[in-house]
Length: 233
Image (tube, rainbow, N blue to C red; front, side, top):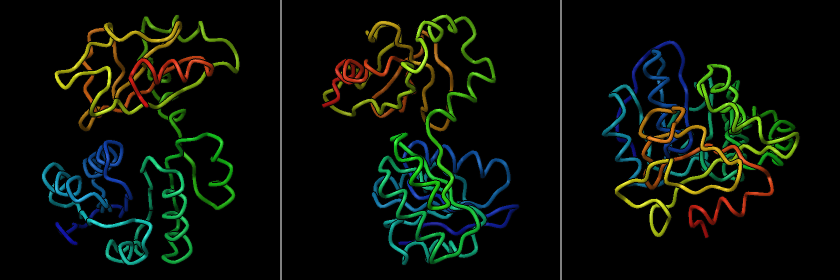
């Protein structure tokens, strides 16, 4: 199902996955003058993208793991194929189809489980995890006075964890919740949030909402406690 026609610009980028990360990436690339197509299998999300992305974006409602939908997105003429869904298997399959069938010169995938990064790289796919995002934030000194919280997490026990705040039944109500009011495991730090179309560092006054994607620094052993803190089942 084709919703909007694409325009001409410096590069042509196809993104599989129109969630918050895919939407943010598409908006940023369009602002930089590139032409973008997004493949999203959830019809409601696809319609949302049509409303919020500039007219030069092409939005296709379909499964990016299906070569037919990749063909609709003209992946064979893309400069880059990017898979941003929350499912590593889907991202791997979509990128492999783009590389093998459409002969795209470059495939980049969001990797949710760091253990899978090696599999992606063996397949010729550039693996990007939350570590990449958090490193950029650190380099830009976005943490300011909160570096002490990160420094209290020693050695290899430090984990960078990406959490999607539950839409229903979670610890964060639909009206929102201040970061300072969220009880995290000792040493835990909410470092950044992807909300609407912006990735930003946060402080205690930042209000989080269900559906936000947050980047948390915490001890590896604290993952279960983090899930309990956000009522993630």
